[in-house]
Amino acid sequence: MWNNLNRVSEGCQGHGRLSLMEEKSRVLLVDDEAAITDNLAPFLERSGFEVVVAANGEDALRQVTAFNPAIVIMDVLMPVLDGREALRRLRRAGNWTPVILLTQVGESSERAMALEEGADDYLNKPFDPHELVARMKAVLRRARPGQPPLATASRIASGDLLLDRTSRRAWLAGNEVTLTPKASALLEYLMTHPDELISRERLLDAVWGWEYPAGTRTVDTRIAELRRVLGDDPSEPRFIETVPGQGYRFVGSVEVVA
Amino acid sequence: MKRLALWAISLIPACIGATVTAALALGRLKNPILYLRADIGTLSLLLGIGISTLLMLALGGWAWLEHQHNQKMTGTISQVSADRRRFLQRLDHELKNPLTAIRAGLVNVGNGDAPETMSSIQTQVQRISRLTADLRKLSELETRPLERSAVDMADLLHQVFELAQERPEAETRRLSLQLPQAPWPLPAIPGDRDLLLLVIHNLIDNALKFTRPGGTVEVRAFDDGTVVVVEVADTGSGISEEDMPHIWEELYRGQGARGVPGSGLGLALANAIIQRHGGQIVVRSRPGQGTVFTVRLPIKG
Image: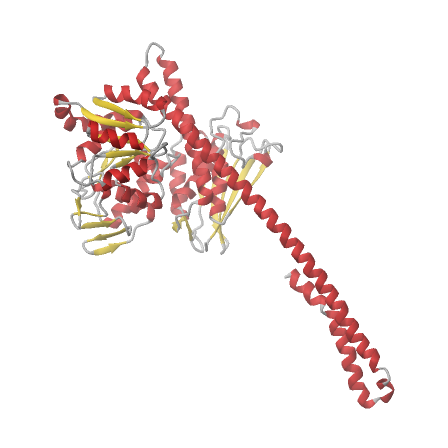
């Protein structure tokens, strides 16, 4: 897993490197636990970011204006103003700075709420710091300045595949397809992270909310189900590509549908 | 059913009284002597009704007391499980932050001049991280809604069996899977495929861990029309009598499990998952001979 993650982050670095040479990406790290920010900030700095720390949601909103970060990493449970409410206020003010929330979005109810919140990605504590950097780079690479991210769009499409995330229904060439809840959540995660190599472990954590024994094989089973339903040929994928020994990647281009 | 029978029995004295009265009343037409005894008829009717009423009152009171007691017990049980759930959630939350800080700190330290110590600490931190995730899942299992789609049990068992065959222990143990073909293959059951796979995976994992090289692990399944039965049997070390009552408890590790890697949550998770599916999981074991775990899952949810 360690190796996979390093490879993932190297894969992402290619894009980010030019801009990093010009100026470091600014990151706002928000957590009320000093033990976390004290240890995470130096690591993020060594990974090529300029870091400012905030201890709660209110502090974070002030820093977003003052520091103008490229990305915000925010815990959820915090005193004064929690992460969810801070994010909601930020989005209501029309600010689309990419945000990674440090919480779990495992169940469909949580995912529905996440869609409204407008976070770009989620990471469950305790996480591997390398995984956080890989997520940050992927989010920054996907971000379109000033525009809502794919992660907050309720209807997205790739070619003739349409996914309505609010009603959790999918259509292929106009015909509705039936997916199990897990397969549908998996498709949603892949489509909202297009062109990104995602390890099986990460998919387990993000979609199942749990990295458990025999779980990586479960991911393969659901991918096979998705391919069968979507008529996707693994040797010539339109949607999901297998990256041998590493994970999966959604190769179709994804657009927001009004 | 029993309750209904008792209520019916309590009506018998009233019925007897009524029958006597009716017999006397009918008899009166033919036999004037009996007419004189009409008050005995009335008496027996009143007595019958009286006894019946007393019996019914007693039954009612008893039922009421029992109901009160049950309510109190149910209340206590749900209170205990709610307390336990809250405890697990708090434990998860209180461990998450320090673990996050430790993992970030470890990356800053790098390998330094004690790479073996560092890698050992990394492994242990990951172990605690996994344990907290498993504990959280265990508490979620009791409350969150279950995904229910038709699970092809034969397909699931084939898959989990293939996984088991890939393990190094499988090379030196006889591992077999028996699935019915005649008169029909296993029916599908409604449930969460991923969780059910985890159950069987944990059972086979245990069987392989506690069986010596040369031993046998058999996985077999059949259906009896109402349930699908899956058995995972081994010729392993068995479970001692002292351990037996505790094997389903969270974090319990039996005497035989010392020195065998594991979290002590595998069976607790399996039990919780099977309960949520409305099924049963039972174990029979003879120390020194082996163990068989039997899972029963209802075909209709």
